[in-house]
Length: 175
Image 1 (cartoon, rainbow, N blue to C red):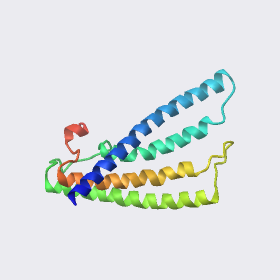
Image 2: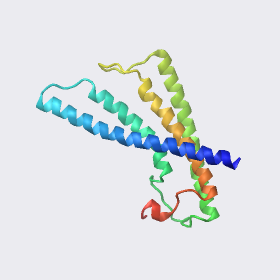
Image 3: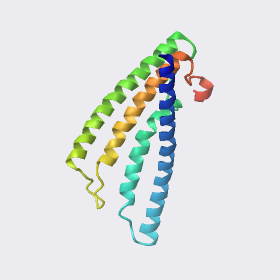
Image 4: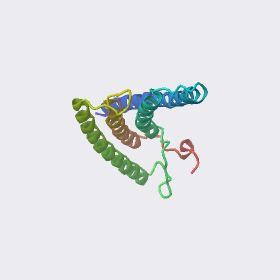
């Protein structure tokens, strides 16, 4: 059983890492797209029809896709006024509770995101732009991102109780 959870944790970590790296490159690409649009619009006076839509899709995917990566690396906001000893039972219980809240929130958001995506996909909804991109492109980021966040939180619970969690204050940065 322990071997299953160890493999589960490693697979989820790898997927979260991949999504985080891709998200970083997507944010970089958005910067390039916007710079290109500024050049086209104000220098060549020939604005594009695709930059706004593609940049939005990239931003949505990068934002939701990076949530599990941020959790994996514990780079979110942390306030540890009372449970600073990372090896204490109290800290592990608090960490587990906070991860369970994330699991619950992520699962609910993924479920409703899936329902929205499925309805929109089956109905063939598209954006109200010139490109008319299927809304499934942006709406799928919700259930994929939050689903991965919930899985990463489960993996973090396993790591908290096996001593593998990244809870050291020095690694988290100064508070």
